[in-house]
Image (cartoon, rainbow, N blue to C red; front, side, top):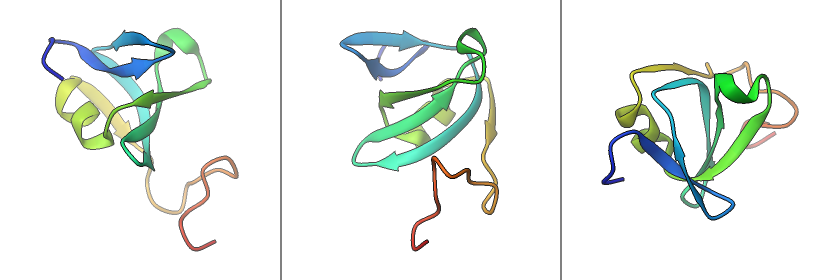
Length: 76
Protein backbone atom coordinates (compact mmCIF):
# COMPACT_ATOMS: atom_id res chain seq x y z
CA UNK A 1 0.00 0.00 0.00
CA UNK A 2 1.43 3.36 -0.93
CA UNK A 3 -0.49 5.70 1.40
CA UNK A 4 0.69 5.81 5.00
CA UNK A 5 -1.66 4.06 7.41
CA UNK A 6 -3.79 2.31 4.79
CA UNK A 7 -3.85 -1.41 5.55
CA UNK A 8 -6.18 -2.52 2.76
CA UNK A 9 -9.60 -2.11 1.19
CA UNK A 10 -13.06 -3.30 2.18
CA UNK A 11 -16.40 -2.52 0.56
CA UNK A 12 -14.65 -0.28 -1.97
CA UNK A 13 -13.13 1.94 0.73
CA UNK A 14 -9.58 2.27 2.00
CA UNK A 15 -9.14 1.03 5.55
CA UNK A 16 -6.79 3.11 7.71
CA UNK A 17 -5.32 1.74 10.94
CA UNK A 18 -2.28 2.25 13.13
CA UNK A 19 -3.15 -0.52 15.59
CA UNK A 20 -4.52 -3.94 14.71
CA UNK A 21 -5.72 -6.25 17.49
CA UNK A 22 -5.23 -9.39 15.39
CA UNK A 23 -4.74 -10.51 11.81
CA UNK A 24 -5.40 -13.84 10.13
CA UNK A 25 -4.40 -14.68 6.56
CA UNK A 26 -7.38 -15.68 4.41
CA UNK A 27 -5.37 -16.41 1.24
CA UNK A 28 -5.84 -15.08 -2.30
CA UNK A 29 -4.73 -11.56 -1.29
CA UNK A 30 -7.26 -11.28 1.55
CA UNK A 31 -6.94 -11.26 5.31
CA UNK A 32 -9.16 -10.92 8.36
CA UNK A 33 -8.35 -8.09 10.80
CA UNK A 34 -9.72 -7.06 14.16
CA UNK A 35 -9.57 -3.31 14.80
CA UNK A 36 -10.41 -1.72 18.15
CA UNK A 37 -12.98 0.56 16.52
CA UNK A 38 -14.98 -2.52 15.43
CA UNK A 39 -14.87 -4.25 18.84
CA UNK A 40 -14.58 -8.03 18.58
CA UNK A 41 -15.86 -8.15 14.99
CA UNK A 42 -13.57 -9.31 12.22
CA UNK A 43 -13.30 -7.40 8.95
CA UNK A 44 -12.25 -9.11 5.71
CA UNK A 45 -9.98 -6.78 3.76
CA UNK A 46 -8.20 -6.97 0.43
CA UNK A 47 -4.60 -7.06 1.58
CA UNK A 48 -1.89 -9.54 2.42
CA UNK A 49 -1.42 -10.20 6.15
CA UNK A 50 2.31 -9.52 5.80
CA UNK A 51 1.60 -6.08 4.31
CA UNK A 52 -0.72 -5.30 7.24
CA UNK A 53 1.93 -6.28 9.77
CA UNK A 54 4.51 -4.05 8.03
CA UNK A 55 2.12 -1.06 7.96
CA UNK A 56 0.76 -0.99 11.52
CA UNK A 57 2.61 -0.12 14.71
CA UNK A 58 0.95 -2.63 17.03
CA UNK A 59 -0.20 -6.09 16.03
CA UNK A 60 -1.01 -9.38 17.72
CA UNK A 61 -0.79 -12.39 15.43
CA UNK A 62 -3.13 -15.32 16.10
CA UNK A 63 -0.87 -18.11 17.38
CA UNK A 64 -1.16 -21.52 15.66
CA UNK A 65 -3.61 -23.73 17.51
CA UNK A 66 -5.76 -20.80 18.66
CA UNK A 67 -7.79 -20.65 15.47
CA UNK A 68 -11.52 -20.33 16.02
CA UNK A 69 -14.20 -22.33 14.22
CA UNK A 70 -14.58 -19.33 11.94
CA UNK A 71 -10.93 -19.57 10.93
CA UNK A 72 -10.07 -23.28 10.95
CA UNK A 73 -6.48 -24.27 10.34
CA UNK A 74 -5.75 -25.69 6.91
CA UNK A 75 -6.15 -29.45 6.79
CA UNK A 76 -8.88 -29.68 9.43
